[in-house]
Image 1 (cartoon, rainbow, N blue to C red):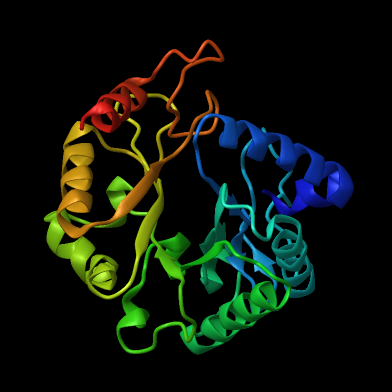
Image 2: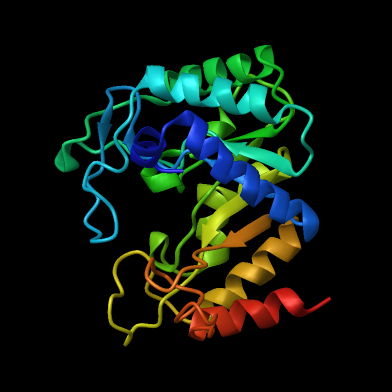
Length: 260
């Protein structure tokens, strides 16, 4: 959920849209992750500019106050609703002065996330909070020495093909995979766009070699993943059109997920 869309539609109207989606998910036996889809630095309230023609350039802009209010609203609205299984608290935390999005330390980020988790539970929230690390939701190395001080949570990573050099298994373990030895981990964005395809960009460029490495790694380490993105425009795309014609990525992951 983009913060801008939350404001444009307003709470009441957006909750109606969400309720419809959650009801459809329940009918088909699916579970839902509600994701506050912002990219940038919540500590300093500086955010990544959206270059897509599909969304306004301020789609990710939010504040600490708005983020806290959003999660309090979600906690109260969906408490006890088992279809809404996860709350992804902030999609891709990123700190980079070169991108004009300031700086934030892990202790600062950790404190923000712990406060949001406490607020969610104080308002009756029953979904499992998911916490991402820095570098566009990729880097969980600080968790080794300073994990989030909260029970019954999970951690998030977004290991697109170009986020690490090969050997992937070694570098993934160093950057985020080690967390799965002690805590639940879910990769809430994975996927690839083949190198010769139009629209590819760093870090999503890859092929089935990446897919094989990722799915094998997740199976070996007991890590869950969701594939990005079920949309014909927002890359890497799983479908080519709204007839649901699969892309090369979509064909690969449909086959992978269909296997027992």
